[in-house]
Length: 287
Picture 1 (cartoon, one colour):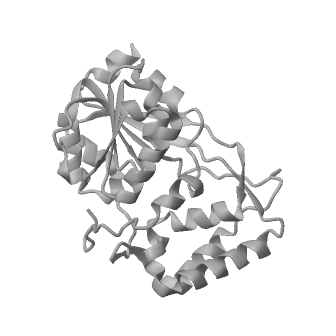
Picture 2: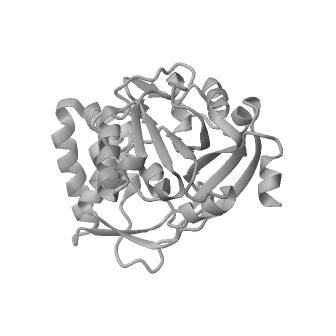
């Protein structure tokens, strides 16, 4: 947990409806990469901690007999339930509204646990230790994120890239220069150093996998607006009575940047660190 900041239930309040539309997808080979790395065959159980609207859990549902998503935001859980119904996997998906700190919550034992850009919001040491205890023998934890170190070229794209620096400046004009997060602020951002946390919890590894991106994605003005409102630091509730004015200014900015209303950008690559519950599990999987 970040020093001087406490989680509260407003962190992503009002963002769930925008999340699936606005967030860029993970690289399309993610499910195949995890299936190969973890030997997934349609059996076993997955727990996705901080599941949001089910983005990762639903993309992996075909690799497990059951998937369980856990998230403290009721809107995210509702979106995940909708997504599972649309994907035809509602019968094998379970969605639990709870904080990671409330685990194990009687949910049983799992084959794989995933954290997809969610772990930094949690009280990480106790959560990591609890999740390790929830994994069965040979179980694995997959920490999933965009590849932060890559530079995504705009060369050859058919439309302009969304003007992210100008969007960030507009958010700061409305909300102030310090990053907002729920009812508090994050002066120095969210924490890193996940590797040491997982090692302290008794995990072995990691095995690193990069799923390449680079595909050209097309985005509309509505998609970019949804992306802004899907972020914790620009969640809809933070703007209060100024929300309509902010959205009008944002749409004006986007229309000026691309009169056609279309934007392009490259699909991010996805980075996965696999951590094993048992010291010899990763070795046996690779041999």
